[in-house]
Image (cartoon, rainbow, N blue to C red; front, side, top):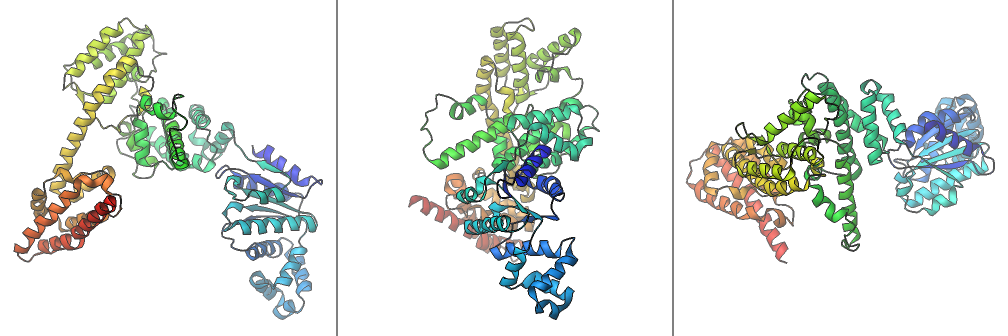
Length: 599
């Protein structure tokens, strides 16, 4: 890209048929600035006495832009001695009054307009790269800057201008049409992006990892270098930790993880996907996912407003990103990639890395084609025991269904002997045992493993998933109740992460919570009060948290009844603050939200 594009730019600027002004267009992060500074400017220096890069970021007026041109042309040039003499001739007595050095300092910031225009008209044998046109404060200023550039090119001797911008973000496209006869659009192929990665992270990339990176870049059509480099910043520390693990299949793990990291990072930075959104899309069953957004049977007018159409398109893009990874996108990996949490200690478990030499993992991941006969037979036997042996400890819910789906694939395609209907009955019998499977979080596994699910496995999965989700929620709520009644600081991490806009306080009895305050740390009482105050400030909060409104009222009433009879103490003081400074405000916010929705 850089060599061919650079030559194309130089050839266009050297073409005497048109003014030497050219537009280099491309999306943010596609490498325009890097190309201009590192490739184009050095080439321009071969023809012109000087070549300068100017960013328009922060430029608030045409005078600001002219000041930059003058400053770079006369005060930062390798021809500064000649320039100083020329400036003194232009401004006459001003230079005599200040002396050479004084004139330079004075002129840098406060040249009179006639002097500045004179200096601009004397610029020659110079090239300028003007960046960030889309970031100027108004379309009027953008038009004025382009007008100044065109004026210098047309009226000065041997001056060239290369203007960089993200054309999509220029509101008035006509100013570009009036200024430029031609433009170069910067695009990057997957090979070129991988080459850029190699330049900076070459020692961390072997052929297999590079191939995996290229695969996900191609599939997602990633062209933003900033996002690519952000992804590599997250991947490299993971790679370092994987390489010191003894029981992990390093080759498969690294190939999978780099795809996952690229998919997560691209979804977040390109489409603004949050932690919750990525988790939700990574666990959504594809048959549900595709019904609304990908089916050809979906009515064209199913989504009415432009805002809804954009929201649907954004969601579809996020889903496409997450489906580009080939293995489990776990919440722990998502949280790490989004800089929410540090890298976990139990990397293999939290990132669900493949275990080396475990034949069941080879079946589960459909990576069994290179197994020799005895290994394959052993892997199938291990698979059957895992699926249908009820005498061993319960299997994790999603893990069991992943293995079952792979097993049905083997039976359906006659890799092994068996009858699908018979295996369906055996699997259903296992699910009838309430102790056969261990409930797991709905966010734990990535739906890509179920997007080609066998219809009979899908039937079992849909029924069993409802029970799994309900049991898991019951278990988590029970754990949360114990933690909350013991200490706010213990329960707060779970609450902030999973109950930001989900009700949970209605699970508690106000009387029990009042009693629990007696054993809480005093600071926990205050922090809990701050949590209550901030929780209900949004006017439409009724849509999300209405279930717990009554608990807040009851808690306030019980404390107002309890606290007055208590002896003066630090606990009583904190409970008074909880009532007056926090619960009272929380109740008022709740009432405001209720009234707002009624109206």
